Length: 401
Ligand code: CTP
Image 1 (cartoon, rainbow, N blue to C red):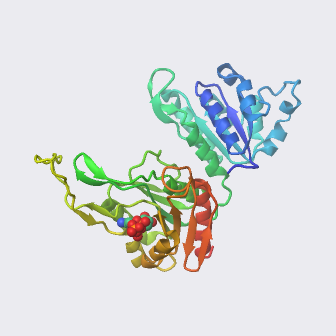
Image 2 (cartoon, rainbow, N blue to C red):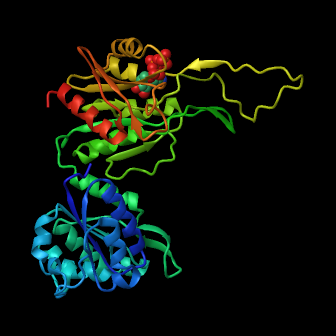
Image 3 (tube, protein in one colour):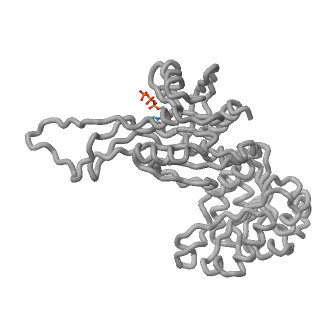
């Protein structure tokens, strides 16, 4: 995703520096060129050699280091940068950056950068909440910086509160979001459903399926990265709540998903139904836990149909709205998927065959075929993120964009 991009990773002196090493490694895995700039204090926490080994590039620390010619060229570094990320950002560096102070390699270089800039503050809660720090963060936002909010948890000082550097995955997400340059969905309202539903049987049991929500979350994030206003309606998943969503609605059952989607569908330009919605639910939900039958006989469960959300959307589609459904099959993929396309009156079905390796639930990849009224487009095996972008490309074509 980040091939050909250069990220300047600024590391300042805090205990969270070790997370920056993991982030550097994650960025390199995304084929991104990473140039690390450290403050002197940061080198007390983690050695430059760690970052040099992870990124394959020299680390810049001192503006006046004559042994390393690349380090005196802070302007050259600034010119190469597609993005600056300061993580962790101390209260001190935030204050300096908010006021244009440039007294070391990191601050001088960043002052010379005109690319997107992100900062991830990490410090003691009282330092973070101090009005001076908050004023500095506001000033940085005014200057166009994106501030990645710290999370709450146990801090190095022993206190518990807001001030922890978010996990490297969250920081990587921020970089991907900022560097996805195609902002071709700006102004579009998109609703995405994801994950499984749970249909209660009694207070401790439910019927569900193997969906992890990954494909739907990938579509939601990709659309947000491209500038869309995204509402994510999600069934229960283990996935962290994705950032940059206009709204995240957490539901459990097919009925709740139906209500959440139909209440919002009229204002949407595009709806992608990646959720694996239960087709049936127990006809009654027992008030108390169902006990084994005394006689040891088998138990049958009467099931009733759930509402088909996608079919409802197809029947209530407004002019110009585009609908996308997913189809998972184990046999006759194209025939069954075309049937769904026509019966539910949707514009595109993203179909996959669960029998094929790398496709379907629980993998980070997918093997999709897009079906529209007049085309069948098979895609090769790719990551769910890449598949999400390809799907959005196709949907935008159908929207005439
Ligand atoms: N879907 C839905 N509401 C349901 C069931 C499914 O909105 N109650 C949507 C899914 O989100 C998906 C698409 O319909 O986008 C395809 O779901 P699937 O269950 O595979 O198709 P069905 O038409 O239900 O066919 P079958 O279960 O017989 O394969």
